[in-house]
Length: 291
Length: 118
Image: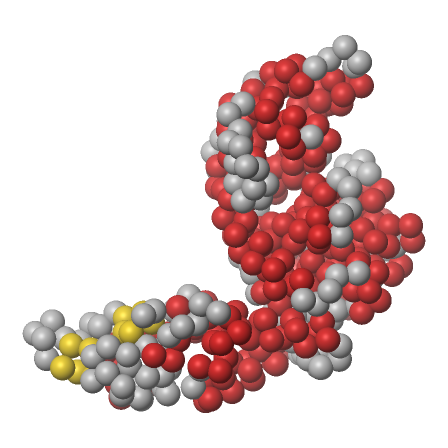
């Protein structure tokens, strides 16, 4: 079964155009003599990327009191590691850009994914967790395994949807019935291959079974709860027509008050357009950055 | 006064401002409870949207459910119950989630932006 999952993910290209930029960021972060200006210069090599970073920095996603005029300002306020996570998020979307899938509307898929990313980040902020952009990234990529499935084995996907549409069954259970594994496991394999950090890999792998995520139980629980909230909002759709079950132990692990759910939904509504603009709309037809 | 697109109108909503056609002929008076026949008349005369009392003052999401016609509330509740995988009263958070989903749906229907009621 493991071999089958591996075979599925082999057809997906590795993270493309931004890995060069991310590599340079890594180098600068490790160089004690480098400055924020050096980092700004690297990002400014790609004017489109710089513009999108500034757009996001000036949106409700951050809600900074002052207007950001330069990339260096954005980096200093957002933080180097956080910018790196945003670039990774952008590169993930680029890898799957142009994929067509007969069973899932791609616009709707990304809307669900972006909303889940925003929601996970809002939860992390509400719980005062560090490195909130990691949670945005985790939410954004939680269902990537389903895109792999739809794009790499379309005939199997059709079988899965035939089972799914014929009975009252969750889509992930239909996946398991036909394949012997589900999209979360495919996502895990994909991210492992991309050498993502273990917390992100496990958040995706266990977003439906967060209490099995070992030391990354909290991260997985945040993504699980975010996915649930976004399903409740019916914002976008990654193929699942039902609002899936909420794991109450994961809910308790996250430690949110039910009273906060409404304000988190409002934040998602306020931020989704800016995030959509920054990560999706302008990605169409943009040039690749210089390596 | 919020306007509701004709295709999103439901029986039981109350017309807030009289509806006239292009020749200024009165089609439906203010205060009239909308029936299917009225919706057909609006469509036939090319009326694209109607001011509806039922959604008036719905800025506060908490109010919107009380202001919906009971039939519509029942319809939306049944629709949501069919897509929630679990019972809605298992825990306070699931109960709250269902309430918020219902409010959201009601707002979208009133605004004519609910994709499932196109």
